[in-house]
Image (cartoon, rainbow, N blue to C red):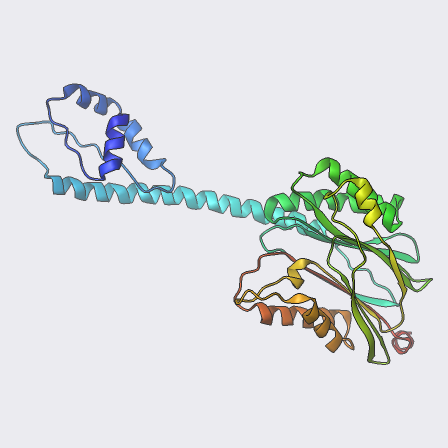
Length: 349
């Protein structure tokens, strides 16, 4: 059987076995079902075996050309069977990925925090059905809100599973260790014990204090934080803030801890914070040019007078125009926080 199969695949043409080999004919007749099954379960290789026997060896009922024609017809039947099975398998995978995507979306914040002092807009879109980006807003008390954004290395199902694991740590850890350095060290140590050695996570964690009017944050290898300061509609300063810090689970705890540095600054009405993942800054156009932080800074500065949602939409529109027909290779996550000016607060009242 194996000898016959290998010969057919090697020459890819009909093969006639003379009556001089009755033992082979008997073996083939007994294994006809197995041959048919073999032809169907080759996967995506469209090959098949058609077994024809002549009940009267003294007469020729079918020429070699006729046998080739029948083989083509049989090949169409088996090919369609294979294609049908493959499409069914693909459909099942698509359905499972859709369920996974719905589950992952439910892991993200269901509601964006509302406050008379600031306006928040958030956007998330995975490069595949599921992805490794995540963000969250964690109320610490009646006057402090923690903001988290991060990115698990890689894409697809494996990154999404790790994202779900990390997402489950955030709220519990922040409630016990709200301080940025304690928070990042606890997350880092937990991930070192659970992630594969070739996996790492970038994360930015900050605390917005409404009473003190400050924002304090640390960065674990993540993209920088864009800060735009303006007064009465005029931009005073705009910059990408990038305090030192290494990726989570990439180094041992002592090296990670010593690299962290907390930055803190005052927040005033009209100021803006923009958080993003590398799916924004490193998005490429058809010429393989990156969008870059300079473009992000330029767009948000040009639209600084708009609401948080307006600024986010302007940035996403600029990103879409820049990327054009190029494929999306990484998840896209964006958070914009716009602090209201005194005139806006008075109007709200």
